Length: 413
Image (tube, one colour):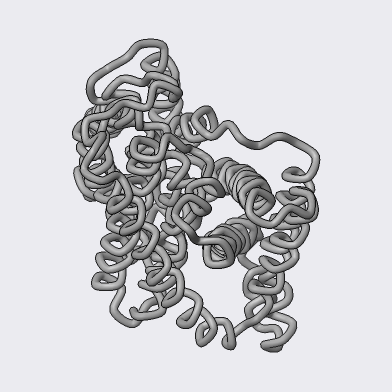
C-alpha cells in the first residue's frame, strides 16, 4: 500500500496537471479553487468505482471491461487506451522538454530525448525502482512544498481576486470539465494496480485519495502561479520561485514517474489483447523473459511518444482531454450500470465475445458527450453524458430481460 501511494502521488505530480490548473486562471482564485475541488471529488469518485470494479472482478482495467462489453468488445477500449497512453507520453515528454529548456538551454528536442531515455531506464529498473522511488518521491514532496510556499508567499497579499487577462476565458462548466477530465483519464489504468493488492479495497481507496489530493494540489499550483506571477509556463514559474536546479529535477522526474504508470498500463492493455492461451504461455515464462516481454509495449509506447514530442508541437491539452472524456466516461458509465445498479454476474459474462447492448449504450453516451460539447453547461459534459448513458444501459438491459421472459413464457405455454 505504501508503494501504491507513492506511485499515485508520482502520477499526480506532473507538468500536465500544473499547466491545466493554469488554464483555470481566468476564473479567478475563488471560482478556480472551487472548480478544482469539485472536479476532483467527482473525478476521484469515478476513479474509485473503476478501481473497485477491478478489485471485485480480480482483473486489470481492460480485462474487467470485458465483463460488460464482452471479450471482443473490450478490444476497442484496450486499443483506445493504448492510443491515449501514446498521446500522454508525447505530451508529457514535450512539456518536460520545453520546460527543461527554459531552465537549462541545450535544445528542447535534446531534452525530449533525455527524458524519453530516462523513462525507459525507469521502466526496466525492476524491483530496484521501488527503493529509488522512495527517494525521488520524498524529494518531489519537499520541493513541491517549497514551490507552493514561494508562490503563495511571494504575492505580498495582493491579487487574491485577480484574473489573468492573458489567459483564455473559460466558463465554470468548462473549468469543471477540465478538472474532472484528468482523474477520468486514469480510469483505464487504476485497476491494473489495485486488483492484485494484498488489501485491494483499502488500496483502491488509498490510491484514489492520494492521487486526488495531490492532483488538486498540482492544479492549485498552476492556478496560483498564473494569478500571482502572471506566468503559465512551468519553467518560468520555477525560475521566479528561485528553483533553478531543483526546478529542473521536478520537471524531469515528475515526467518520468508519471510516464512509468502510462507505460505499465500500456503493458497491461497490450496483454489484455492476447488470447487466453498466449497469456498463459507468457505467464509461464522465466522471470527474466516474462519481465522483458511484459515491458516491451511500454517501452515501445515511450519510444513513439518521444519521437512524437521531437517532431510535433504537443502543447494543446484541452482537446486531448475532451477526447479522453468522450471515450472513457461512457465506458465506465456502462460498467457502473452493470456492476452497481443491475448487479449483473460479471464472472458469467466473461465468456461473452461481444455485448451489443453495451456497445450501443456506449455509442449513445459518446454521441451525447460530443453533442454537449457544443454548448456550455454548468455541470460540464461528463456528468450529464454519464447519467444519460447509465439510464440507457439500464433501460436496454431491463428491456431485454422483459422480452426474454415473455418469450420463455410463450414457449412454456
